[in-house]
Length: 131
Image 1 (cartoon, rainbow, N blue to C red):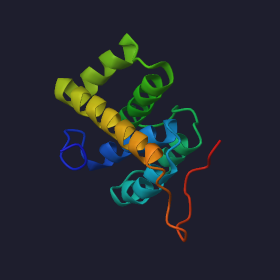
Image 2 (cartoon, rainbow, N blue to C red):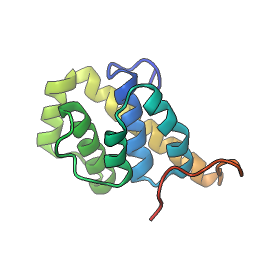
Image 3 (tube, rainbow, N blue to C red):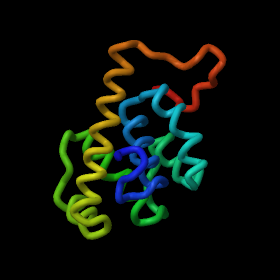
Image 4 (tube, rainbow, N blue to C red):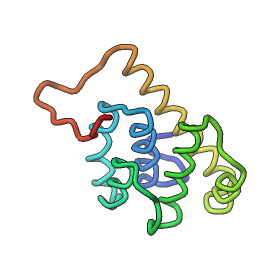
């Protein structure tokens, strides 16, 4: 459900996955999902905002909000009332629950990748610049 059937749609679902991968510096997760995000129609300019941790100014309202909410969650371990209320307005209660579950699920996936020390295939090019 979280990968293919959320109320957010596939393009915004992939954006949420990329935000999680970037905030947790998960090369494996990012490199697996960036091509899918492009295939699902996510604008490469939006991907670069996430990849390079740029400002969300000038992005579409939904894209900017998903990035902002994910950044708050992973950087501050909470979401402040204004982005939360904005998310409810844009996505509805179900959409906010879907987004929270998606971010949490891919954070758990990132943890598994780290614990199990999973790496890209030797011939696979890393797509995420690491700090």
